[in-house]
Image 1: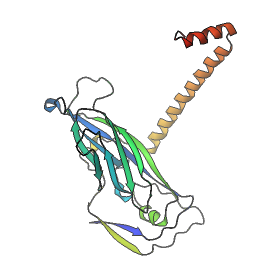
Image 2: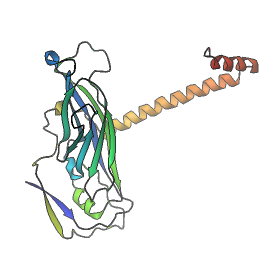
Image 3: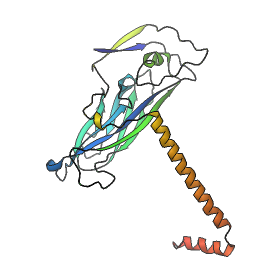
Image 4: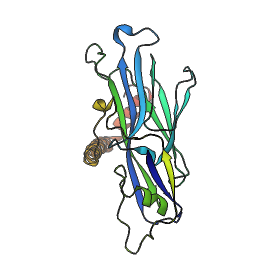
Length: 250
């Protein structure tokens, strides 16, 4: 049995941030010969640690809101892994709501994910062995955490915990309470679908951000060139151009 330590201190640590990289998404398989008009795919929606560590250290429960056509479309998962599996034929947006332990955060976190059953690109006929995987990487940041929360996660592999600012010295842990966790393991390292999980790292995300920034800068430069060309046009030509655009001819 696994135990988590809860400390009774609730003092806030100013100018300190604790972050947890997470991934949420769906993996869908075509049913092949077993597929029917209204049941063509089986799929799983989930929230996991980006490093596949146990997220129940911060997450108390996850609520998945499915399409109203499903029986009991509001699904509550209170133990890891935070996921659910279903089958169907249509794509729709899934609302995912994370609720945290009381010493972590009082607010909930709302996420939204589009279920995809078919690949974006035409890669030939669908295969029952190769799923459609759509995942989103994000980081949950907890500013000014309590001392109890800091103590509890400072050595947790799923957390990014900074060094405390100079002058902040934590007292030793105070009175403690043991809270049992029913699952022996809450990580997703040996998950049946783990072979399809994407590998995310901070370096990869920085490269993606840099590439996106370059695209935006290139687009801005292109717009500036177009504006400068318009500014250099004779007034009569500009008026014709504007008028043409108004009537859909520009």
